Amino acid sequence: MPYRHVVGPRAYVFADLKDLMAKATPLRSGDMLAGIAAASAEENVAARMCLAEVPLTAFLSEALVPYETDEVTRLILDTHDLPAFRPISHMTVGDFRDFLLSATATSEALAALAPAITPEMAAAVSKIMRNQDLIAVAKKCRVVTKFRNTIGLPGTMAVRLQPNHPTDEVAGVTASILDGLLYGCGDAVIGINPASDSVPVLSELLKLIDGIIQRFDIPTQACVLTHVTTSTEVINRGVPVDLVFQSVAGTEGANASFGISLATLKEGHEAALSLKRGTLGDNVMYFETGQGSALSAGAHHGVDQQTLEARAYAVCRPFKPLLVNTVVGFIGPEYLYDGKQIIRAGLEDHFCGKLMGVPLGCDVCYTNHAEADQDDMDTLMTLLGAAGVTYIMGIPGSDDVMLNYQSTSFHDQLYLREVLGLKRAPEFEAWLQTMGITGPDGRLKPQGGGNALLTVAKGLDAGLAA
Image 1 (tube, rainbow, N blue to C red):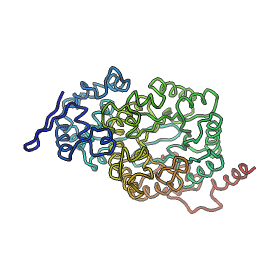
Image 2 (cartoon, rainbow, N blue to C red):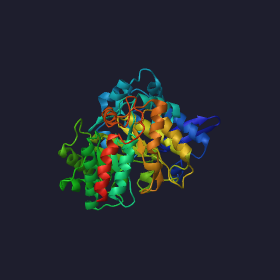
Image 3 (cartoon, rainbow, N blue to C red):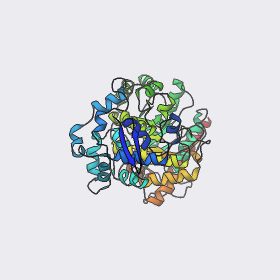
């Protein structure tokens, strides 16, 4: 069905809802590359004004990606919670924006609505919101998950300790883990991107992290970010696995390019649950996403990349993950050209994920050939902190020596906590105090010979040297 909007003497016609959504998206290089972006700023504004008048029910009757050929579309529509949708079923996209910004949209009300919000609805409303709107609404959305600690409580922000090494060297990985812990990082997960996909190497890394967690009695979880099928194989071999990881996208074709389907994810989920390693909860999945992946795979169906990103969160949602994050600037300037586009995308992704009830964090990052720098990342990190982001990354020096991209450092989370008063997961915070790493105020103590972790680390270093 075509959509039409008049601006002055000119009428803009949009072929269908998919075209309208693409033209209403804030400018980004990926949509330009796909040939679906608005041709002018005026057309973009006309599309946003037109989109604001579209009923939310339209997204239940007009699929942007065909139902018959895409299992993600079938998942979205077949599991839509109609009873939860009724309170907003009469609204247009514009009405929905007004509601989200109102005092009526409390944290409790938004949590009740989450199962009713399709990714297309979330993406649509985000397109007519300013950055401050995205921050204000996301701040009200609370998604709490548990494994060995509690993530997502109000006033908290977790950090993934990312101790990557270009050769998966045990000593190098261990040094980064200890360094990160001493900076108070690691409550989200101690998660390694391995350089190898060898099962023996992955098993060694998993045993290493598990050994550190058990030896120091750390209330956190481990993950080696390998393919879900490899994690399942490792589990079957009796290796300790806390979280099962997988990168996911918003269409069946894009997921197929990753070598996965919904059935594959279900197998990994069931395998992780069977281990019963969580002490506080059973949220056992860790997913990563990023705008542009479907276009890279030639599986975007002419849909804009931000809407497809929101559809990736619909893939995550049924598995009740502990963690989901958008690796926002990782794919490169072909999809998000500069700092401005990365900042906007990060805020959109966080808003859409939280609105849909997904525990969304963000790898605040960029590649070295993007028109962005660390000042842009400081801006996005600060805005996400204000918006209540679930977690960010902690990487030695903010420079990942294995993946060769720029992210956020162990130091950066200290800045956010100081400026915004953000605490860590409560169980992890208590452990840091017990170990003498932080004081009752959550701030790092001056390090010295009396620090318990450093004392134990000396023995660990000696063992590695031997």
